[in-house]
Image (cartoon, rainbow, N blue to C red; front, side, top):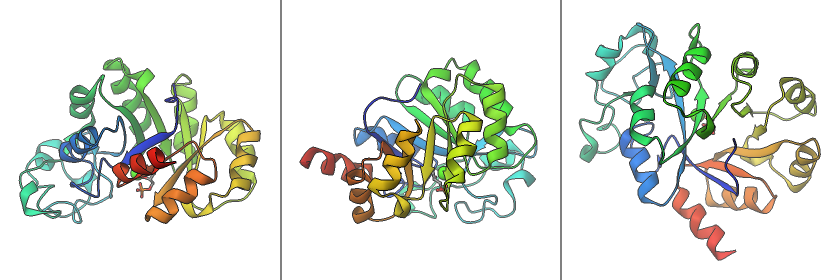
Length: 241
Ligand code: G3P
Ligand code: CA
């Protein structure tokens, strides 16, 4: 199920304050009083689902090369924290299983299928089900093909389409896929767009909230939620309203 109320979703964890997609970032979200996080998944060379944004490890670790060119054991040796700030040295890349294990009952997870590895969608669903967490995750992707897989394999798990550009064909395609959410880029979110999407029965969950101004624009447009790197600022804004 989709969480009720406005969805304040810590993007890759509270990634303004801790290295993205790590325990530190997810712990920080909880510490800020947020109970929803977004994270990205890829497949390792040996078929494990790992939590990392980019196709390659270069930007967010001390390693190099594609995620899919490393086994889980090799990924575990990398430092995924010190690129962000020295105090996070030793932070590691986590498997999705480790994340589910650690945060079950504490966080609702918005899982983005980012990688393109064969079977990634189905394995993600299997793992979520294995932890009994089908009622506390959503699955999103920019890849419509992944969403079609999710809908066929896990019709009980709400899904959302991340879209970079808008045209009204998004609505028809989302209806065909029977999605719960449409996730437009934040700068596209206007009251008119939200109204149009709501009339067709979808929730609006924005992404790409790079400034507080955009954050406020998304709220004022009447959207249902957003991923945001600084969820504490969103809490404060919603309280002031
Ligand atoms: O909230 C979705 C957002 O995470 C999509 O963009 O590049 O951060 O994965 P990206
Ligand atoms: Ca993402």
